[in-house]
Image (cartoon, rainbow, N blue to C red; front, side):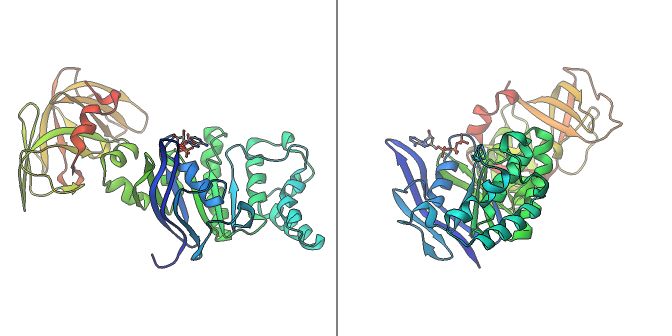
Length: 377
Ligand SMILES: Nc1ncnc2c1ncn2[C@@H]1O[C@H](COP(=O)(O)OP(=O)(O)OP(=O)(O)O)[C@@H](O)[C@H]1O
């Protein structure tokens, strides 16, 4: 990376027998907003705490601006952290909470006052300066916590699920505010979340973590459209995994066979996770919105498969269909407001799979069988 500001090199942390963080490498660009995304217990917070200096790694390095932070205590690192519960001092006003970090750094009174005032203004908190945390809404507390973290002008801002205590509407709005603020400050930010929608909406880059490891890093667009592992394909957005066996795998021609012996032929498809050999169990991975369903099934470009309708639901902007294909439940979203129910349950239907939206995922067969219980028959 051209200008990696924060770098994690082979970072590892165990708690007894548990490997919480397993050889993690990351390079975070200066001024960028990077999300560390993963399910509960995958090691996100431990990674953040190692960067901040609250947890010592067993192995590896944390570099900021090329300088190792190992052996430096938390308050000597050029980092600042915003916690999920904000951790505001309840007995201090907003103003004193914000000024706290500057006062403990023994900065002169005038500078403390000026920087506190500027930061309160930046956060739109100037009218609340004399209030106590208990007199603030959740969103205002969150902004105060953020103000307290940026007032010391850290090089790297670390955030651990800072929006998760807020209701859904406010959370969605604050994403935009937070992102705008980070861009104005140009501060390198690592943001931990388990919410994939939040990560896609906010991150310049997203690193997906699972079981202590980084499964894949990339832009939100890359993670959504080019998942490299079954975990990422399943975790980011909704995806169908249709188990199949590779029958022919050659340049310009791919033939797969489903469990009910239907064959599909494509002249090309995205292959993910490595080559799939002939005879290998694999899965077709395809998004609900890329599929379409038809009763009469007039032929179009791309592969088609037969199935039977399980049911349909009207969901406002879309109609969602569940179709059983070779023993697997496939979800299909059609974004057409005029769409009427296409058939009755159990009626035969034809599902179209546009070739350019299919990923053949090595190792996907296992995911397809384990799968999401909601998608299993
Ligand atoms: N101080 C500790 N002592 C023992 N085990 C710990 C400690 N801190 C974390 N762990 C374990 O390390 C693993 C990773 O935890 P971590 O909190 O980093 O995950 P996380 O992805 O942040 O999860 P969440 O989203 O639920 O906060 C978990 O199995 C957790 O139980």
